[in-house]
Image (cartoon, rainbow, N blue to C red):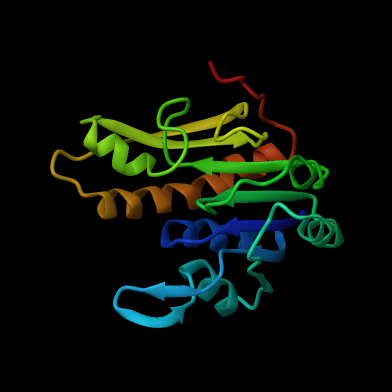
Amino acid sequence: MRPRTIFFGTPAIAVPALEALAAETEVVAVVCQPDKPAGRDPAPQAPPVKRAALALGLPVHQPAKVRTPDFADWVRAQRADAAVVLAYGRILTREVLDTPRLGCLNLHASILPRYRGAAPIQWAIVRGEDETGLSLMQMDEGIDTGAVLAVRRLPIGRDETADELSTRLAQLAAEMVRTDVLAALAGQLSPTPQD
């Protein structure tokens, strides 16, 4: 029986991971940030994850706030075994993190503990790093502070842009969903606390 999952993500980097998760698990819901204007167009635009979820026939939830009892109740009602998060952009409450029986897993676009928080790809480039990667971690209430389950590394090209690196990291995230995330859900990975 395939695990029931909720996927949390918003930008394009998260789309390949969502697609991989949908192929490997029963995604019962996709949570992304609300539609908002993009560029010079004042009309609200659907985020890339929402467009991908709808194309896959998956239900989408776009709460304005996630730190509310109503949102925690909604998460409980999904009866998910696990949640998988990649670039969602909101901090989840302890109540939400504790709801899925297998926990909440986050794919973060850096080699943790370096570049916790927002814009890890951009920071790695600005700081002149020669490699970055993705860390799979168990979520806790801190910002990217949970125990690490797996790390995959990628070299950063000398003239590589953040968009180019994001595209490569997105593909790596899909690969990690098919391997490391599934292994974590099966209890096959040991967590390592961050320094």
